[in-house]
Length: 403
Image 1 (cartoon, rainbow, N blue to C red):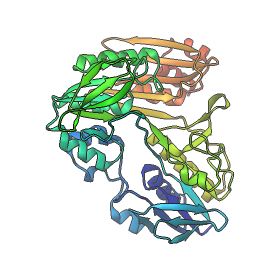
Image 2 (image 1 turned 90 degrees about the vertical axis):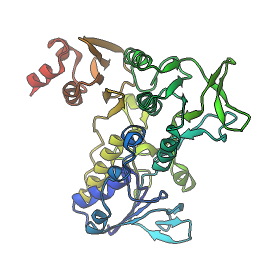
Image 3 (image 1 turned 90 degrees about the horizontal axis):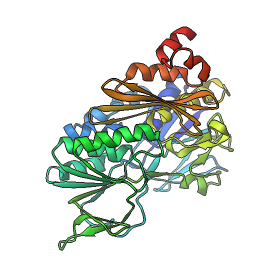
Image 4 (image 1 turned 180 degrees about the vertical axis):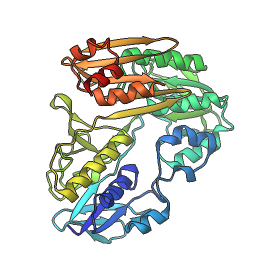
């Protein structure tokens, strides 16, 4: 294998290139990305960057890293097509880039709801650095922000805006916050937290449209039941959809992302996919697509080992996630998919620790500001229920006993 092309210059794509060199790959590496500039971290955009505006601190590596590592990075380049027969990537300028192996790391994009008024000035979304810069400029003059969507991004922004003295209303269509990611018990804890921060939180409240004032600017939202929520900035944080169109057009199988096998390879042996765009076999045989920086990084490392070392072991990294909302650091180890038992461990003057089990084995653990328990949880996923019961559900004690 002489030449590997990576489509996507996000954190997964950057890790792919770096891991190839770490694994000893000596051939050519070409990274193609539509967004201008060097690869950077996205998670801080809704948190630290909003506070300090330091874009340089977001960079994953300086330009010298790519030069020193002989990684060719072409930013601001749109990939128009994948020619699988010729094993070439075609860019928008008509150039054709041959590959021996192609890694698709195109990530995901925001998925705003199909409602009227989204084009009104004052309606914003947060996905990339340009979005964050735009919001940061407007925030100083914002009196009341309406956050549509009670997921990680929306709640991180809400906490940051409240800390800056901005009034906030969070509007969530589901009956609880972070419903796709959290247990009801932990979701309830965060609902109380955000209300204590001073945010108004409306649940079971789908949005029907964006309101506009006489000047045409956004002035809030109208809910499906007719209620109106006023605000001079409206953040749409209603989830994402995978950027799988290139793969679909190239004839690769896709269903809520690019379908890959347990080694993260597509049906075409010359193409792999990773990160937010990849759907891979998960618990209970169900396909899983993870919207997680850590998953993208782990995917990249796994693919690099396979391409360089020829290993065909299935991808088996324990997924983990985090979200900083004010002073609360939420950490999740594992996946709650199919959980059939929940054990809630109250903590004195702190958030509870929530253990979720599937088929009498530990499937996921949710913690807040409890790094030690989280780290133990990442090592104990899959542990039998009886083994944890024997230690009073003390994960660290069970981990030490198993060592």
